[in-house]
Image (cartoon, rainbow, N blue to C red; front, side, top):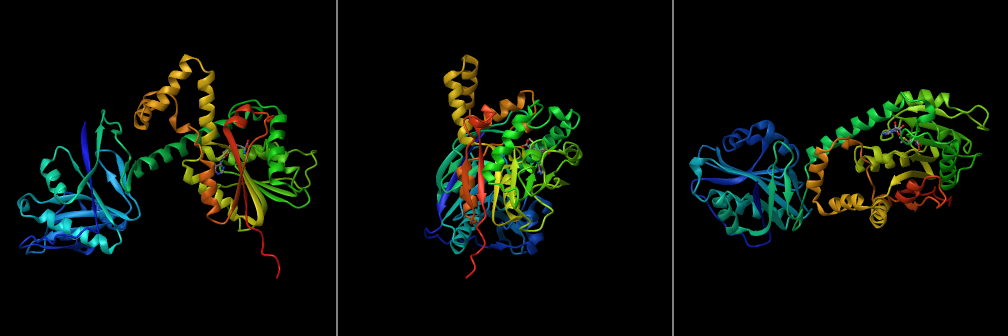
Length: 450
Ligand SMILES: C[S@@+](CC[C@H](N)C(=O)[O-])C[C@H]1O[C@@H](n2cnc3c(N)ncnc32)[C@H](O)[C@@H]1O
């Protein structure tokens, strides 16, 4: 267990020019590699990527040009090892980290001189706040930091065995925030990608009748109801529309949509799904042109811009590695649409509805359900994640939920028009109706002639 103190300083405060006699304080570049290595505890394989990421290094050089002290500055954020989280400064702030003074150069005012040089440099970079932290078991470091910076937060942590640390305290620190470590996020994304792919591939071992939306046996009417909803929201015209279905699965819904289009192309990133998609193709259901299928990832579609008039992607984005992948997939779908086209991202777990459903479950639920809900609300995220990690079951298969108004805002900032569409109260699935929403996205139309 331990704790950290975060410090901040306004960069526009007058900097007291400090000198460290006999040392030159300046910004160091990657070309100063030998000098930097002399004054660092890490090897070049750790330090070089910092330059590559745009971080800056400041140091104090002795008469032989060797750094006896180095300190790094980031504008984009970096890991706080004790917390296993990343510290991310706001766009007008900076964060300095990994300050190190060689033992033989301590107590000579070098640290303070480098800090002063950093504050001065930050003003020219347009940063008005500079953050740093010191471990609370380092009284000397705390004294040095508090001489020129003010305390803004204390954060406690506990590490159990080799698990990710539990962090207690606010994640919001002035104009900066503590977020899950990028590496952790990337690890989770990799596990999710592998787990969901294995899950979908597992479907192929089941008879077709048990596929789609998990291993449920759904009546044909359910597929038809989904197709009706997709067709209605996209305003499909069987005489005109050339439609893309992303994540078509074994075409159980697709073939009902195909009846409503001039032409339909389905893509799925699991090739085995497409074999079944071909098989499940109806021969006598009034489809003008038989749908075609291609194996492709919805985040990198093998089609030229403006290939389709309409597109939809139903029941897919919650299974992607991250919400950012969902955003990337939507942009990719929009890319292949003609001006004036429309996309439908269907059956998205809607964060606001999921929360409302939880409140309803509380109202109606018994003691066990209430205990579970209290635990979900009361326990800090880190503890919940930790406890979940101890429970059996594949955590990587959890649904992503989306904040649809926020997602719409991001898309609208790119010139698209969005509308959140709800399922009708008589929709075949009560769960979809209560916890999921649809996002209709209109691509701006072609310029009217003249
Ligand atoms: C839950 S099923 C939904 C199927 C169908 N759209 C429906 O509404 O019933 C999700 C499908 O999306 C596919 N999928 C998942 N991620 C994908 C991706 N990145 N690109 C293309 N297909 C993907 C899966 O292989 C699976 O067949």
